[in-house]
Image (cartoon, rainbow, N blue to C red; front, side, top):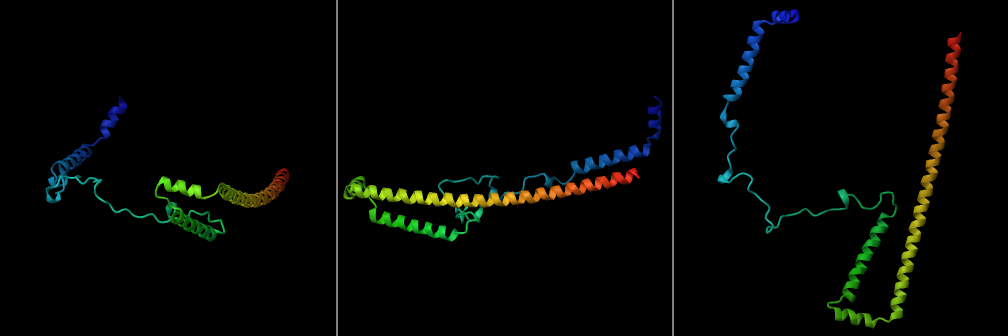
Length: 187
């Protein structure tokens, strides 16, 4: 009870009056302030707000994509033959367009006639050549990947041995320092 009495004695009426007047000032300035602040902004041409909607019949201009993801090259930057890959891709596109122009068919009957023109032996030979070149390309890719993997393993093991030797040296130095400290403490 004494604490409550001392607390009431420490409260000064001037402090209470100041706090009350500050609160009333804030309340009145917010309640009786300029009414234009809380009103809706004027709309041009008496149009209701947010009436612009997507119209699927209109053609909206879209930006054309440039490059690959995030506008960077889609080729691995570590690959040394990016130009060769681009040249090969261009050659394949040209070859495909040439094939479409020469062997293009307009209807199924024309496609059937084209199939009958080419002998079966020639088709099998072409298929074998395609498979042979694909297998060769896969073999070359595997060889390159294996070579790169071996180089990475060599680099990693060299880094690991350097780290181990550094850690052993630090451990020996720390042990020597600990021995020196204990000898000093004993003396």
